[in-house]
Structures are given as structure tokens and as C-alpha cells.
Length: 180
Image 1 (spheres, one colour):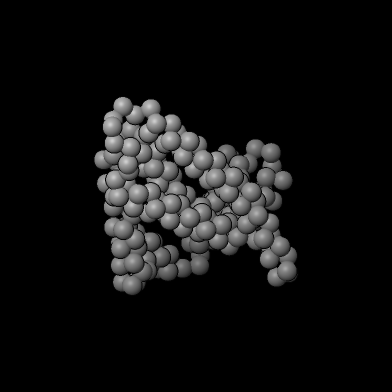
Image 2: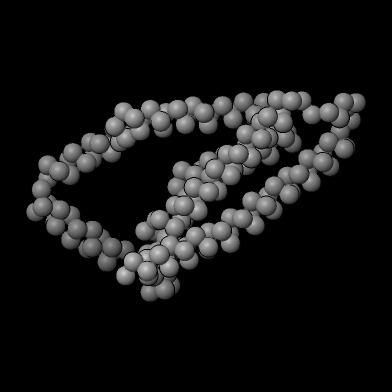
């Protein structure tokens, strides 16, 4: 049984690699070409890139790599990745789950900052400062208990409800799924 789970995790990871790797390579190649064309057609006399812009590019590239590796890890460990393939096989109407979570959001934000900051508005690079703030907050919540206040309240209410209400909630959820 463990071998089957490992095979499913490896298949989910390879599926994620087959999508995200060409996507990121393509997006960054298009960005590089656009940047070269944009700089070449620029009417300014200075063709050198400021040092802070290069630092931002390196930081954004690092964040993209960080997001990519965590998306792959989440794809291999997520139960949604393994259940999505079986659900899609049983029902043609079901949609496969999008794996990535917060790392997919970080990847999208870095790509947005990269394109807009390089091609249109240099002030967009200031939004790169959001990531260290977010990382600091994540570390703070990890060491202060690891659970966000909303999740903590929900887990306390679940513990107080007991087993009888849990069965009732499950039956209600099954009924609502059948109706929709």
C-alpha cells in the first residue's frame, strides 16, 4: 500500500514538473526577450541597468525557484493531487484541484512584479518588500503556536462539539453534495 502511495506521489510530482518547468522557462525567456527589445528601443542615452534593479531580479528569480520547489513538494504530498485524478476519472464534470496553495500565489505575484517592474513602472519593485514581511509573519506564527487565530477557534469548536454532531455534519455534507 505504501508503494502505491509513493507511486502516486511521484506521478503527481512529475505531472507538476511537466507543467511548471516549461511554463517558467517560457515566461522568463519571453521576459528576457521583451526586456532586451525594450531596452534596445529605449530613447535614453544610458543603457546600463541600475544595481538595485539587478538585485530585484535576483530576488524575484530566487522567489520563483522557492515557489516552484514548494509547489512540487506540495504536489507530491497533497492528498488533493492523488484524489483529483481518481475523481476526474469517475466524473467528467469534476475539475481537478489546483495544487500549489500560497506558493502559487507567490509565484504569480513575483511574475507580475517582474513584468510590470521591468517593462512599465520601476516603482513596482518596491512591492518586492512584501515578501520579507510575509516571511517574517509566517515565522512569527510558526514559533508562536503555528496556528492562525481563525484556525485555532475552529479546532476548539470542533473539539467541543463531540462525535455525534460530527456524524450529523458529515451526513449533511453528503446530502448537499448529492443535491448539487
